[in-house]
Amino acid sequence: MQIVLPSLVSGLGLVFLLLGIFIDQAVIRVVFITIGAVLLWLDFFITMAIFRYNVRDTNRRMRRIEERSLKDEG
Image (cartoon, rainbow, N blue to C red; front, side, top):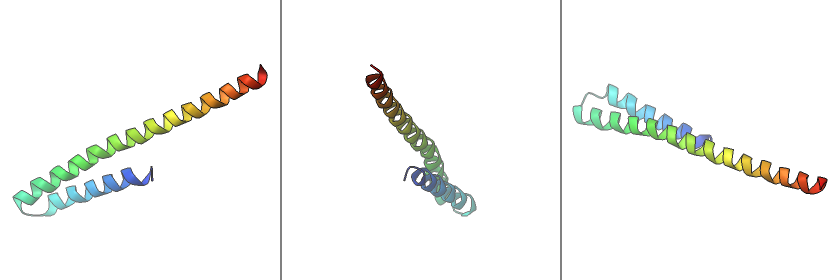
């Protein structure tokens, strides 16, 4: 799920951008390009949030491993 969600959001954003470029109505063009750009922008923040979560989780695991090894040594 952590890899799929940003891919879906960016894919949907790209589809909206392409539809906005190729549809020949001014209102639809503006709306679709705006939605596409927002989704591509949102993809970056979703990816960074997932990355931050994974880094914090890894840090927690490393801290537990280090605490266990210090208890075993001491």
